[in-house]
Amino acid sequence: NFAEATTVENLLSDIKSSLADRTELQLIIDDPDGDIEMVKLAQKDIESIDAKCNSLIKQVKEYLVPKEKYDSEDAVIEVVPGAGGQEASMFAEEIFNMYIKYVQDMGFSVGAVNMSMNSVGKNSKFSSSSGITRATAQISGINVFGQLKYETGVHRVQRVPVTGTKNDRLQTSTCSVAILPKPRNIEINIPDEDLKFEFVRSSGAGGQGVNTTDSACRVTHIPTGTIVKCQEERSQLQNKKRALEKLHYILYESEFNTITSSVASSRKLQIGNMNRNEKIRTYNFPRHMLSEHRVKMSHKFPSMVAFLYG
Amino acid sequence: QHLTQDQFEELNRLVSCRLARMPLQYIAGNWDFREITLQVRPPVFIPRPETEQLVELVLQNLPNENEDKIRILEVGPGCGNICLSLLHERSNILVTALERSQMAAKLTKENACLLNLKHRLEVHEARVDDTTGLPESCSVQRFDHFVSNPPYVLRKDLMSLAPEISVFEDLRALDGGAEGLDVVLPILRLAQDHLRDGGLVFLEVDPCHPHILPQHLEKSNLPFEIREVVKDFNDKERFLILNKIDK
Image (cartoon, helix red, strand yellow):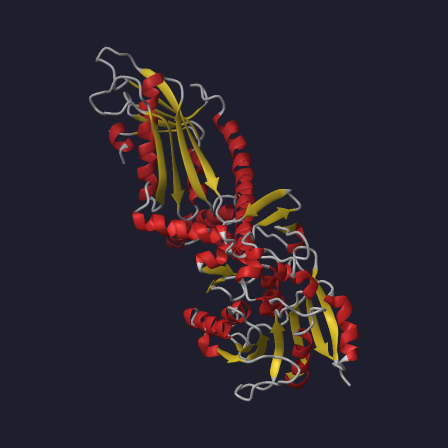
């Protein structure tokens, strides 16, 4: 958009003038007859110009990378345990709770938390739960999806299961995290030509000669063939309004499902078959290490447990 | 869940009413019309769903809501469904209503109070026929538009009305005479003197009227022409919009 284009233009001209300054300074440094003090000053200035240029270039990059369609929407998070039995269920629960705290720390609000608890298995002394079979929550705020979308994928944990005895070996289990956009502003426009209204017909001439309490209204949305009937109200106008409201909602839901299913199919691509090999991140407890596989970084955490608990 | 003795007796009473063919609206005591709820009582005529469209037609033909007051005359408000809907849906409308039935006039005023609209409505007990003009007590003597759902049933059709109607409702609200025009024509005569130039007359009528009215207008020397005929949801020609003819 125009505002962004202007900003990018301004950034680019800043970069250009900085580079021009840099060239001049370089000339001073390269001058064999130059004053030593001047050269030192020039070198210092070049350092600060380089730093400034790098930051400007970074800003330009951000503007040039096109914004994704759903970045500004709210999101739904879904965590499902993968391979690894009860240990996976428990890990999934920990990951889910971690994310809930994380998004709250980011200033987002959490709603509609739905956790299906695992009913089988022995409990550990650390937790009275044996994990989840699935958990979802709705997260709302500003640019939620854009901030969270990179969490999607298979998370892998390597640790001695908390349910086991001291002799149990290191176990690897996985859970999948899916972040889906929850579109808010779906615009449904229904022009009059697309609608056909029908009301209850009376026999004969109708009008004053007939008394009826049935003012039911049926509306057909011609393009989609959706039919909605309403007879709850006592006036024809109110039944008509209600029918239109219902129709509006049906069309909205259908649009919503289209959007989320197109994202969900890309989700399937993201998560794959959820076996232990398709991981994006590994939490290794014994070595206190968190590895992010996509950007190939590893980070040491003194206390993995504390990290997961926020 | 069992009913108490009082509830049981009341239910019995209501069922007896219905078995006696009392219209459901009278049993309920009130009914909805467009966006408002109206008290209804025998023998005052119960609003029909078609008439909701008459109100819609009037609203469609008014300029967008602004400061200017629109003065409308209604003939035969009954329980007040037309005038009170107009008043409820537009804040710049003022209505003068002429009603021949004392009970209907009373009910219209009652509903106006309940809906907080009485300050923009004037109800006069008066009959509209060829001998009387507009009552002098009316504070407004010239109107922007006329609207009416007058008695328009042809006398021959009056015989075949369902008992709900013929036993419980005031037949004077239905009987339009031999050709169903006994009230329509006097309304137009009233409009001849009290409707502004450029004003419109909105009527609900019998489907035969768009075809037989023109010759009556000529015969009675009424300077009106049918500008538009509108069908109702049963696909019957139900509504007429008329305007004065320039001389």
